[in-house]
Image (tube, rainbow, N blue to C red; front, top):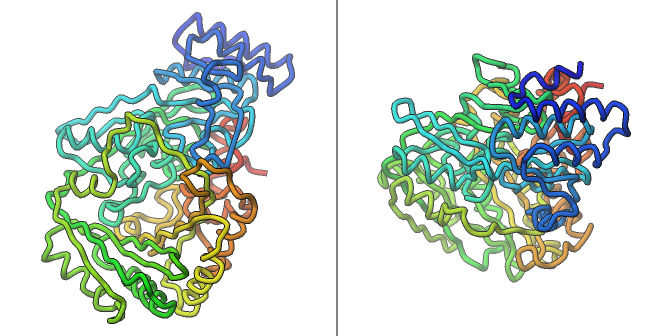
Amino acid sequence: MIRKWVTAATNGALLSIVFAYLALAQTCEVGSTRILNSCLANLGVRTMTASSSGYGDASLAFNRRFSYKPAAIVYPKTKDEVSLVVKCAAAAKAPVVARSGGHSYAAYGLGGQDGALVVDLSSMKSISVDQSSGLAVSQTGNRLGDLAQYIWDNGRRALPHGTCPYVGTGGHAAYGGFGLYGRTAGLLLDRVVSAEVVIANGSVVTASAQSNSDLFWAIRGAAPSYGIVTAWTFNTLPAPANLVNYWYTFSSSLSNTQAVQIIQAFMNFAASKPTKQLQCVANIGVSNGRVYVSIMGTFYGSQADFNTAIGPLQSSFPGDVGMSLRTTNRDWYGGLTEFTGSLNTGGPDDYDNFFAKSLFSSTAYSQAAITNWVNYMTQQGNSAPVMWWVLIDMYGGSVSDVAEDATAYAHRSAVLNFQIYGYSSNDGHNAWVGQSGIDFINGLTSSLDPNPSAAYPNYIDPTLTAAQWQSLYFGGHMDRLKQLKAAWDPNNVFRFPQSIPLPS
């Protein structure tokens, strides 16, 4: 049984070290940080532990609401080094998590609990593009900005993804990956054609439609529960030649009734399933006791075609709300960076101190539901214990063209995707306000939909019960995911508070 764990390793000296610690682990207390760190110390992989200089900074969460103490943070440079450190953690029965960009809303890249082995992939950042096929192979240490910049510079290629350059490609692709190009080109995970994965026994395998197809299904929607993806292969697209970015703004003194009418118009338009070339995002909040609404997005095509596509939305706005429209005409790169800013990820990352909720809806909400929501905003939201905002993405399009069961991602039928976000002031420098902030965001969400049926796992909410998150994030795929967990990670090596559990 022990030899099964070492069949994939290639370095004989390191193999013998890992083998010895595997044997030691059978005679010592399980979960021993001492066993883990002793094993890691002999591998030649850069490792930080609690006694290391720099450990404090390395273990800071993007969401400062959380503070966890990993047993160790390792920085492998190759897939074989990832394999070796996974073997060490398995021997010590320490939970293993990968950190790509570290932007998990619940700090799951640090384990979501004390005592995890964090496999930081920031030293694994190679990218290549095959100019004949358009296939891009990107190691998981790359961030969205790195990937977008490289494939543009090397062939004027594009992928659908979010607009935050520092977000890691690992979690973003693993749990969906939606952005302004999503309704046109699908999710980032829909462009994955294969992945290099280190699994629980340390083997390095390829997951694709032709090889380990069940694992390939699982990692496109729930990858961190099954292994460490060390490289994705994406089927890139020729970058659109031209696009239109646009912004609708409205009066700063909207009445609640007017705000409801604008939000209702936006939702109804999304539910009408307009052309896939169009993406709309509504931004909602409260200022000086009044609800503000703005709508922005991108149309992939000409100005004339944009005018036709957006016409039904614009004509549905009430006439007395101070509507103003601004547009710009760009190429792909100019249009992307107009929203993202620079794609360069060489500087220090930002951080925040926040709690967020999400929900999907396959229909527009009723006028009564939106009225209740807007009233909550102006009554409770004007004096909320946190600063807050709401974003609503128009969803569907090419995302919905993929069959519901084609991947582990479970939310193909939605037309609206909500992110409801509360944060402490000054971008995370101030302490979180406590339970009152969570209660407010929960109330803001339930004032619109007290019984949501689906939520986006990249906007993870660690306060959900097991029954809630399993249903909201994975829906009808949960039973199959549990069976595949037993097949690919029977000892639950890759685990965190909301990882796929083994079948009971």
